[in-house]
Image: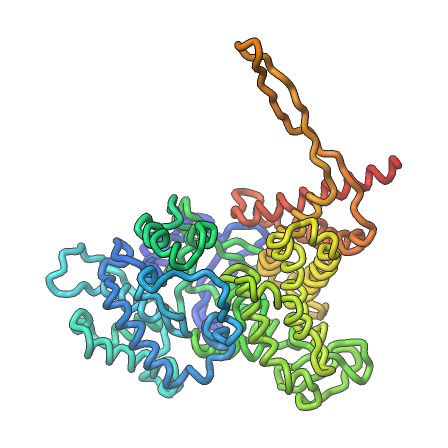
Amino acid sequence: MDPSLLDTIINKKEFVENVELFECPYVGRSLLAKRDLVPGQVIMVEKPLIKYPLEPQCRSHASPFYTKALWKSLVDIVNEEEGCNFKASNNGTGDSDSSNNDSSDSDSDSDSSDSSDSDSSKQTPTAFSPGIPAALLAYLSIELPPKSYRPHTDINLDFFYYPDSQQDEWADHTTLQLVTRIVERVQATHTLFQHIEAKALISFILKIYCNAHTVAHPRFRTAPTHSHKKERRANYSHKWSVTDYAWTQELPGPQSYICLLRWGSKYAHSCAPSMFLRFDLAQQAMVFTMMRPVKAGQLLTFSYLPEDDLSLGGLLCGSTLQRQAKLSIFKFFSCHCVRCIYPDWICGVDCTACSAGPVCQLPTGVWECQACHSTIVKDQSRFLVEREAYVEKMIMSLAHRAYGVKPMGESVMRVLEPYLMDLLEKDGVVLPKYHWTYSTAHALLAIYHLKLFPGAFGKGLASRLGMFDKGLREASVYIGFLNDNVWNYPIEATEYYGSRMAALVAGWRIIEPLVDVVMDSTEEKQYAFTKEESSSDSDSDTQVQAQAPFLIPMPKEWEEPIRQIIDVVCLQWIPVANTLFQHNPPALVQEIIDYATRMHTRIDALDSLDLKA
């Protein structure tokens, strides 16, 4: 490796000792393990060459050429050009939000502000927006406009791969054609881009899509709402007959940034990755950590696809065909990883021949039972023909509501449970337990029973209506599915270790409210009152001090689902998480470990009470 190209690497010694660059079949120039690597080992810590906000809100040092008018114009151009090719085919292959704009997203009870409060530049994301507009603005900082007084930064982008439209294999690719049309329109519309060679601008956008990473930065605002906006809302409150409590005052969520890494772009993709990536704010660098053992000479991989539970076509939600379609459109290749060449286990249906195993689609397109090996045609499954596409769309839309990504009003809250039950079975077509939508529907029901309903109508009513009993059983179904199909893999003949961080983070949505319910329901808080005489003869101060809570046995109905969850989370997942992050674990991982440990400790304490009794 050229030492001059290692200036972005923080742990140069470990990086050079652990990896080497080779030209590999299928994946091109990629980094391989130079020696045997073990879980928890930090392979590389690298600072980005380029970093810019995915959706800028104002002009800043990270986006110095941003204006609301320019941003809106760029977004409009992308949306207009994108509609030609991608509007009809964006179901499951584009951005996760773009496939969820259905009628269920409208909610008359959700909070909304007046039009003057809304940022005029805020528009609905699509497959390539805000990605392409953000890349266009970012390139202005590399090739500065004439008469710009900003210091020039020399960045060599030749190290990065991109598909060249001059080559025959890419000449007809729809994404390349789209980017070319967008650049032509942008340069014809805005003089700010006319000093840039069109080919350079096109290649930069394609290099970003092929090589860059998206990271989430927490926002460090101290005030949830601008003072002027508060004042306007106060003026309108008498007209709309609302109180201060009608306005949500939550702090904004994390902001997404695009980071282009020189060496981070040379790791291959896998839907069964061997590494986990995280952005370390203290070092302002990306940290690559091993998740499973890798032998010398093997590829080092991470997932180019979303690892969250809100993206159709990612590692958790969707089929192999949907993942391949997303990779083809945005990353320009087909995946040949171990997960893609074996049966698509998380999209299985019931076998009518043996009733013992799932019928899964093979890479050849054939649907085969994994138990009796009988085959079916897709048209023979009523679920696949009549309901799969609709159920996937509605599950993703409801997940955005239940998980708090989009607002949920009272009307949606009231119909959430019956709607999900209707998705599980309708007109005699039952949701197959081997399909990812089955487990996700149970996760959403668990969130409703353990968190949303108690939060809206009170824990006492939730307990009397048996909400907690239902929620724990539903949580057990979801955790079991994650463990069997994401954390592990049912086919033992493969070397696939599963997507363990994806399973852990997805399980956190259920673990957090579950542990809160278990802790609150198995204790009675105790307080000690003491009086301290004051200087006045007639007055005394009463001091209240919390004592160790009095433990209450949990209901018998809870024991089975809770112990099933403990067997998975506390006895399998948490030991692995402790191994992976022995030093400086991410805040979220540490919180998951702490919550799971609290629950395990509480259940052990309750078991001790039973033994004493």
